[in-house]
Image 1: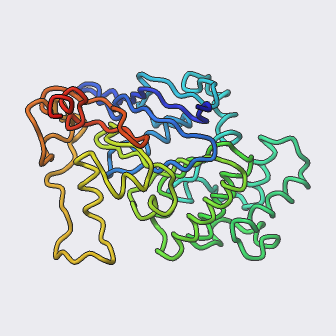
Image 2: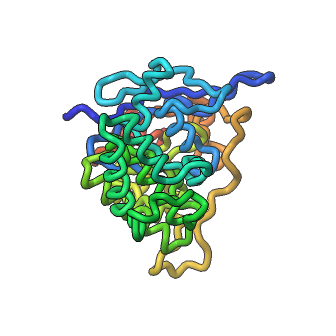
Length: 329
């Protein structure tokens, strides 16, 4: 097996508070292969954005990586000094945020921001940087890019600003792009265009993508594999087609059942009872056990670990305990 581009191993993220330490990510592990699109889904608060922020070293204080390792092409990056991590961020890992105004400085033109990013990470002249910036804007679908490059961010619509953010994330030709809810605030028709642009350009450049979203439709159209997060833990990860068509973890089954389809004849969609637990009230055993329709006594006591399943997927559920399956068989 070739070495993965990104490898996250037993990642733990904690937030110290006056009432104790809250664990927001609890031993999350996954790989992203070179050129692969990995989708990461889950409810709000599941830990999707935190995972992306931890990878690029942008956790908001007092959040901290309290355990585990993050490797980028064989180099450990979670323990690097701030300045070394800053050089990796942008040059080797690009970031597309949910809100374009998070990434774009309203006081500077798009030209200034793009050319500065290019020249920070690539040794080129001002003229060459501007040429590259115009080509990038043109590639992400900005009309009249050579003229509009000198506009300020507020001169662009929401969809166009997000295209500029994608250009900014790709400016230094990174190996990995982390896209955190890149289409949430956009119209449906614009969402599809943005995702297509991101996927096409990354494919052209051989970049891998970690696509964080709550929209399974986007994952189905875009990702090669999907990772399902619940309460800071991985519930299931595998090829997107297999997970969508034959989900194994009860939480993933509920997620898939809540998606309407054109052929659906049922009066009601599947509903997962209850709500995801707060960080200070995560239950013992499997975090999903209070909401699970197939819960067993063991689920309330022991936490299941990710276990290999046929077809290259992994599931964290006692329903697929190998010893139990052998006994049943």
